[in-house]
Length: 113
Length: 114
Image (tube, rainbow over all chains, first blue to last red; front, side):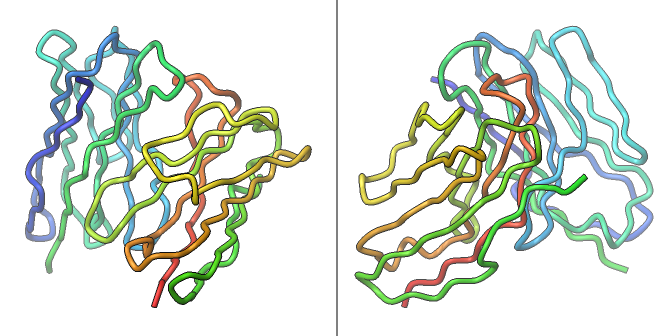
């Protein structure tokens, strides 16, 4: 069964600190993995996308890693800011299937001053 | 470049009524996706339209339906509203119905059923 699991469910950190969010998946055959940021009540916005051959990709203070062998990805946020408070969603695409996007339930990050 | 737009922003209905939600994709995008996001839950896939045709639907009852117009905009209709239909409904568009084409999301319509 194709699944995407994220951890932790929620996380509270102090402003300026780093944090790492995890995503494990069982989606097969794998096509790509995206991390989205979703502010409360808004639509998700793409942060990074990685294919099978990529094991790291950065977008400013956001760095995503991918281990296709263990089917794990992480999103590392450096020097967190209050505006980083949001839900972070991991989305994995399969190569086949009419509906081949699988969403994690997200990690709710709260950055406090 | 204008992003995905959705209307209305908020919608309040009572049980048994019908709701119509609208979505305009990014110019040039032919695929439109609808998702439901209930409070505290992940996105649940509802419907996928591409080139005016329904390509796939998620595990939702038939009272959730929609269509895509020749200009690629889309409507989501929810009939016989139930309390549990209260959620944020997100529309996304992409260049085509392939997983490697990124989906761009709209701001959503917050539907409240009383």
